[in-house]
Image (tube, rainbow, N blue to C red; front, side, top):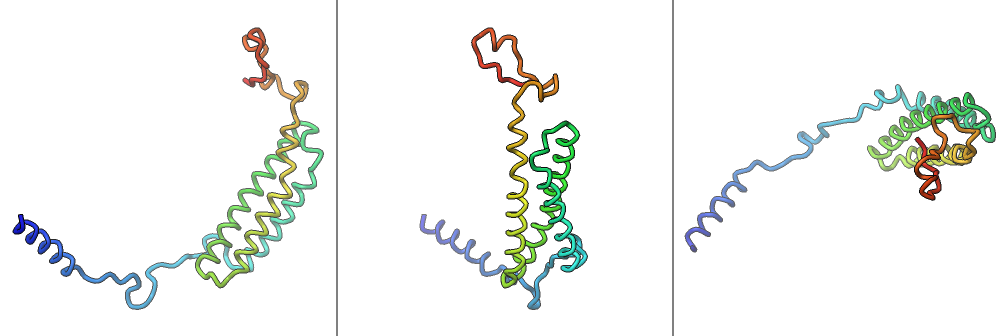
Length: 161
């Protein structure tokens, strides 16, 4: 048994010492880099686009109170919200990666956090207005509550088809 343990230790230790040392940055430089131009052409282009995004967020917020007036307003609000979220994700990714590459760049981190907080705060009304659409006359025929089996069984009949 001692001979087996000795042989196993020799084999394991022998392969460990035979392995070349790991150098994560050969020749003193990183073997990778992030190409930020795939997201935005430059930091100035990102800032200009961020200003345009802020205007789009304000335009979405301007719809507050009128989202559920009719189907066209609702569709417009939902499309604007989707556009804002897609553009916001692009900016948030860019700003986070700028900070992740250089943690001294706290301005990128703070700008990203502020942009996301602003967008969330200014679009929060949308969910409430949509949830307030509970009256049957506000819903299209296909979305009206089912009155069949659930109603006959004493259920609340709030199931939507």
